[in-house]
Image (cartoon, rainbow, N blue to C red; front, side, top):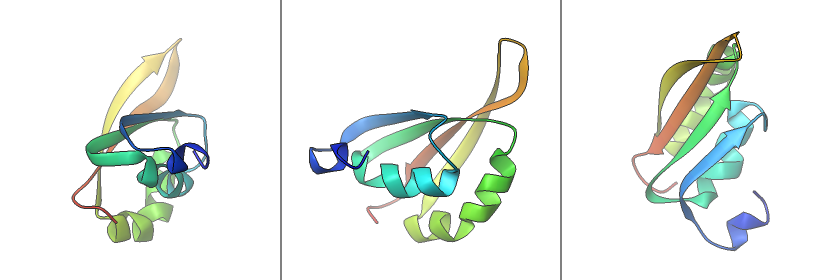
Length: 88
């Protein structure tokens, strides 16, 4: 993410097992172009991560919607779709 942020922006950024939501928001926001989104594959601690990330979510004016899924019988898996109302 650090290298790619210097090389441009993308319609979609997808993360998997990359870190807590607060870190993902900080790392990935510069990579997402206007009108794009970040899709983060998250586990059962997402609610806690979102609570911890609230200051950054508000600062970035991010909107996060969640979409549960099951992977190989593992419960609590969620895709967190992040969009932003403006550049931050």
